[in-house]
Image (cartoon, rainbow, N blue to C red; front, side, top):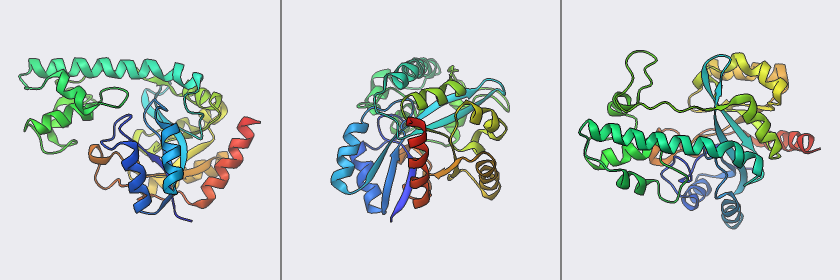
Amino acid sequence: MGIVDLHCHTRMSDSSRPIEEVIARAKEVGVDHLAITDHDTTAGLHWAIEIGRAQGVNIVPGIEISAYDFARGRRAHLLGLYVEPGHPALEAFCRPMRERRHRASFEMVGKLQRARYEITWEEVQRYARGGTGVYKQHIMHALIDRGYAESIYGPLYKRLFSRGENGQAGIAYTPVVYLDAREAIAAIRAAGGVPVLAHPGQFDNFAAVEEWVEAGLAGIEVYHPLHGPEEERRAKELARRFDLVITGGSDDHGFYGDPSHTLGCRDAGEACIDALQKRLRAIRG
């Protein structure tokens, strides 16, 4: 069996690559099972499944919900694996998030214009064409092509979009209200999917796991490019303690991501698919 990569993105959200290219690259590097988990949308998954079938790549229909742990005041990302694409529960839950993000991006571009950056909303939108809204990565792409920066996540990104946790917020920072993590878990289960906590080390979500298991969490992402040995150890311990499925993935975003987060760079392993299928049967009754 080939590589199992259960976390990646396409142009439907904040990757530079269209679905066809993502699947073709996955095939090239030996990925056998690929979960497409775009942010807050399942758009394009039916098409992805067809392409995957033709290419010999098993597509796991997924989503990554941009959530928030309101009890602890920190962000959290929830993966939904094997969700039903276009399910009304997911669409109703995630649509407001997409709309808020898009409006925030429009405000960010306005702030940059007032700060004398020569970009337009129209050109930023061109980078997001074919997707579900504008992200900060699309704004940065426009700034790169205008000569203001050389990479997406360089010094300019921090100067413009910093949240201000360790000092002053960036000049274009615009807050967005995220979705409740417990409600995200419920929406994923309502759509017939397996709720998995994504990269808990990134936002230090470890303390919330017990509470979220009670809400229906069924898996935890152990293998992720942002996880070192300590994060993997903590995630594995929580998986053992609460009987969670261990998953993993590259979190590939193409040009819009870290160049080391390439498709197939993290392998969840064949046993993960079997464990997810077993949990799926339990969820769907």
